[in-house]
Length: 152
Image 1 (spheres, rainbow, N blue to C red):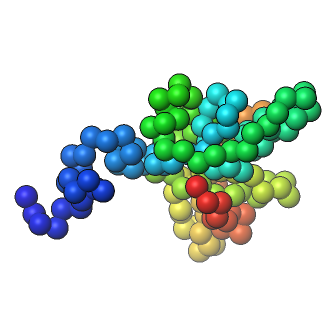
Image 2 (cartoon, rainbow, N blue to C red):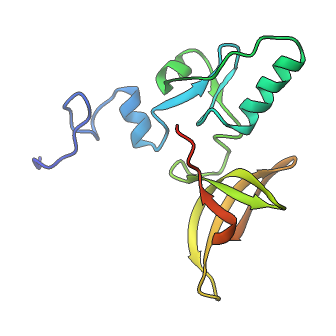
């Protein structure tokens, strides 16, 4: 074994560590996620559109809306919470980067799948994003994309 092997927080070879946080990081999942006390799912970030809409609905219905809290992924999974459909969409690789996509004048949450160089020599991003009733995959010019800077 090479001495330069990456080590986890326990001092084990990172590839071999079996703790849920190390497994999550290896699979490209966030080590910490966001949840609310009454929620049934966990989120990548506290500003997730689905989380914010759920909080708004709870207030409108007269139910209390607890503030999102950051917890270890293992705690969220142990509590029986599922992945948010918006934060963890199907058919999006775990290593896809969160981004904002400009669609019809509105910045929406999305995932950058890959960069491509266009015929005009500008960068284009293949992105997956939620729009209206579903998800879309399209190529957007670099001017229509920005990094998602929300803390996770």
